[in-house]
Amino acid sequence: MDHPIPTPLSPATPEDAGPVVLALPKGRILAELGPVLARAGIVPAPDYADESSRRLRFPTEDPALDVIRVRSFDVATFVAHGAAQIGICGADVLMEFDYPEIYAPLDLGIGRCRVSVAEPVAARAEDPSRWSRVTVATKYPNIARRHFAARGVQAEVVHLNGAMELAPSMGLSQLIVDLVQTGSTLKANGLRESEVIAHVTSRLIVNRTALKTRPETIGAWLGRFRAALAERDAR
Image: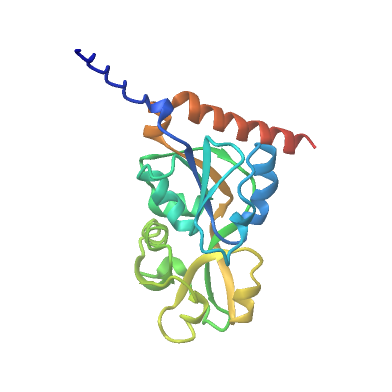
C-alpha cells in the first residue's frame, strides 16, 4: 500500500515567529517602569525586578511577550541586533551609540536626568572657549568627543565604566562627563556641574527590521504603550 507523501509544513510567517522580546534595563528605572508596564497590560513573572535573581529572561502573563533584564547600555545592543524586538533605554544610550537599526517612537517621560560636564569645585576658573585640548573621564566617549569637538576642543577620553567622580582628584582627567540626577554624588566628591550637554528621559525603542517584518505584532505593542502613556498623562 502506497503511503501519501506528506505535505511540507508551510514556513512560519514573521508574524508567527514566536514571542516578542522586550528588553528592560536593570537598576532604578525598573521601579519607575512598573506602572507604565501595568497600564500597557504587561505583567512579567514576579522576580523580573529582583536584582538578586540569576534569571535574565522572564515570561509574562501574555504568551506572546517575554521580558529580558539587561544592563542599560546593553538594551540598545540587543534591540539593534534583533535579539529583542523592543526595549526601553535612556536617551543617553541612544546618543552614545546612534544605532541606525533603532527607531525610538515614544518618550516615556521617566528616568529624568541629564548628561553633564563636571569639574572640581576648586578648579582654577578658565575660559573654556580658549581651550585646545582637555582630558575627560567618562563612559560616554562619543558624546564627550562630539560635545568638545563642536567647540573646537580635542577631548582626550579616559574611558571608565564607573567611579568617574574620582578621576579628577586622582589625576586621571581635568573633567568628567556623566549622568547626573540630583548632583549629590558630585558634591560629595568635590565636583560641581559646569554644563548640561543633554536632558535625558527613557525611550521605547524598536528594531526597524522587526517593525517591517512583523508590523501588526510590533504595532500592537506600540499601541499599548501609547495608550498607557495617554492614560497616565490624562490623570
